[in-house]
Image 1 (cartoon, rainbow, N blue to C red):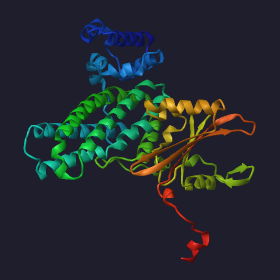
Image 2: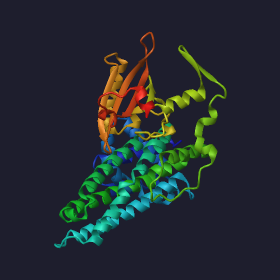
Image 3: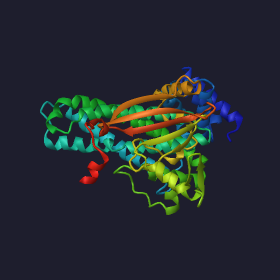
Image 4: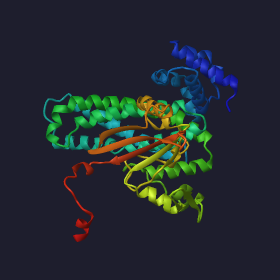
Length: 404
């Protein structure tokens, strides 16, 4: 635990910067106090300031400024994880993606100054570089669905939320880039200025974001997590999956891959009013449903999710026990809270949405779960790909299929 006097000093430093004082002046004023400050110290100080009422957006806005004050300490104390470690994998992916971003920025900056149309070679290079970003989604999903929940268990909640917000900013910039890079090479020349702008913004975002994670968030994790937790993180990473360019980790052991399955009751049965099922049968039944289901209890904690072969949304076992609000981007948390508040106060029993995702129509429904006496027990989320269902016309009787 960080000594209270050091934590208070760090909070004073951050507050001074946020009030507009010159970071270099602050750095000199607190030079003695800054000695020995760790990434975990900074994370906890930021987290407490957010809990004290400092807007998360304000912490994000000036995060890079106040990190500059701690830069020397952070770079001296940064923990380099061993080969194959989850943090080492993330940092190596950072290095790869940042080098690709810099290469794309340099190339498009030169091409944007030329008046002649792009040749096939230049267009091919742009497509190849952009492909890395098209396929980088699992990098951020592993952090959001595995690393962040483990940090939250140690009381570090504010910094992960700030990082998730930045992930969304990166995704938004990437979308602008993707829209400007059609697969048809002949159309690239018309978009080169737009591509250059998106490439410039993406390089700046990644440079700033990766510095914060490499020097604050990741060392904080290294300091706080136990060896057993790192096994859980690794299993969660394997479950979410890697990018095509990820350095290949060693194969996880069978015990790590199966996670908590060994905790199931052998031969145990679940007794329900309408029947009795062995635990393994019940689990297989739930996973066989053509929908994704997630149950959130009356304290807004994720308690269960199904593991169907083709999930619509990424889930990791690390989210079990996590606040459901922390499982969503900050921009949508107010909608989640509105639904749960309405369920809890008996204002509604169902909320439903439908969205297009990667060319598929996804139907998302939330159901209030209540006891026979009407007590609110929690919320059941059901997500279903209804793309093919929407195409159904006429009739198809059971025996029609058998006759074939």
